[in-house]
Image (cartoon, rainbow, N blue to C red; front, side, top):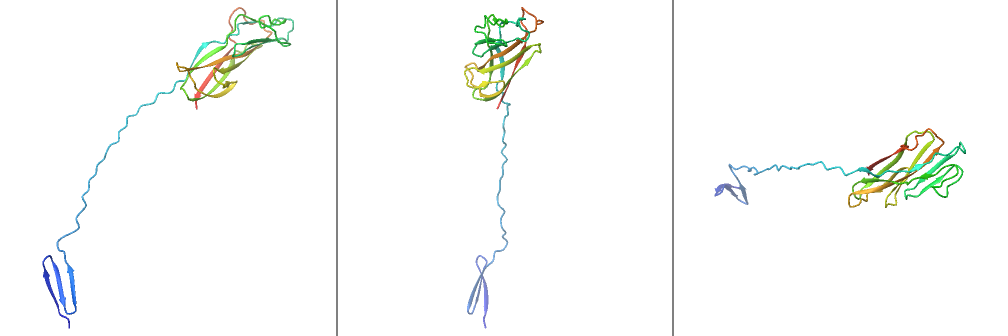
Length: 213
């Protein structure tokens, strides 16, 4: 027979004793699990916004394109057309429906020749240095009978040619933030004796459009 005797030790420890065994039990009275201590803080994130200015994209005419004074073909042949070429380099050429003129000023016997100085056009384009640009160039005819104009353009100091249509290039401006486009062209003049003479006549306009890539 086993006798068990319990006695309460200091600190609530019950000691059970008996023959052949000893049992220890811990009793905690009147104490629960304490809650965690927490803190929180909301930190605002503030930003000031500004709209970035657009990069420059502006054109201005430095020098207009001029063929000088060109001659309407004479009546030697009703089918004659005078062709006047003004290259971006400034070189001018004259030919008629049959042959090229040795000298643009002397012309051909059909009357095709240039009187007065010619000037290639020059347009300044303001753009952001290093930016890639897609440019288109085309001409609009003034719809004068027997008059036809086709432009030719070249970016000054650049290997990129702005042929009729479009070109991609990199903006490489000077210290003033401008790069330049040179303008030449081909002008064909057929027999049209109703064209006003002795005064400037606008035969076409050249349109430049450019955007950043």
